[in-house]
Length: 438
Image: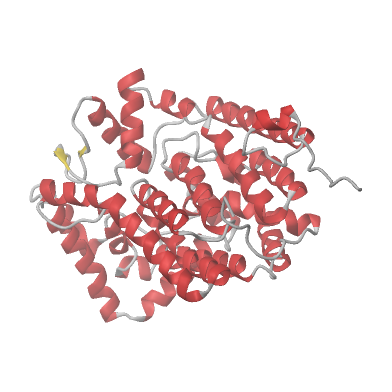
């Protein structure tokens, strides 16, 4: 009789590496470890080189709210009239992160920036995992190395910006949503993660646009829509306690934060008629200046109502402004399809490095066309391509009210991941991996 073939016995080393490294060779793990080490070194050097940069832009508000939290005044702010009060000027996730570090280390923004350096390791490793599940080993190693060195993938990580938390979490969501067939548990987990991300950056809502397309192509449109509904319900459940808090503290309905009033700074006559910076956001256009008069302060929800009303009134009187703002913000500024000088003009207002931004934009000019080529090479994975295109379009729509290089930050590792198969000529295998346990 011929003995039945026995399955190979796993090596002890492979068992020790655990589920994440199952099927991953020792050489690949060394490459990944090297990419992570390089990424950490580059990020630490960047943090040290910019340690004397003053806070600018939104960093100031995160610093203020974090300082209040460290003093036990949860989610207090001075904005916009210089009157300290409990509010929701920003989403709560990142101020809470800053406040916890201030409580531990004292009011030292640079300490928070150093604490965010290890998050770069997560971003590099998650980029590797996303690329490996989508395109395989060779692309994964290349993606990890690119993300480790790509300036626009880490420029905000070591500054006082929520992208430090939002970027790795965005990668986790895309790994959960795009690399396996959907199940109820996976859909609920994905929705819960989106809910957490919304509490860090409400504009991340655009990620939801990819779910029905990815899951519909993988499991049928009816089931895909059902899984999307589960994800939406989970996201609402995660966000709802904060919404209830806002209703109690602010005596009205505010889903996440006052960041939703941003359209007032874009949809106004001053922005629309600017010959150099058309539809660029501005904090205090003349049409709403009276609402920011500290002699006549408004409560937060009244201010929100007036600012939103101002934007709506302008759009009703000038319907074409929506398409024009979409072009200038959702396309030109968000994706940096503009003069380099226009992109660099944002640098001092956000406390960034001009040199690093210039290098990052040089790399972006190469990576973006390669990413589009990578999408083309993945065309057999219809759900993946449609989902990523839907996410890109939804981001352009969301950021029609205000955009710039920073607003693309959470998608920079994804651009790098897609650029690698474009450069290496790799193709995505057809279909999604089945759920675990099948």
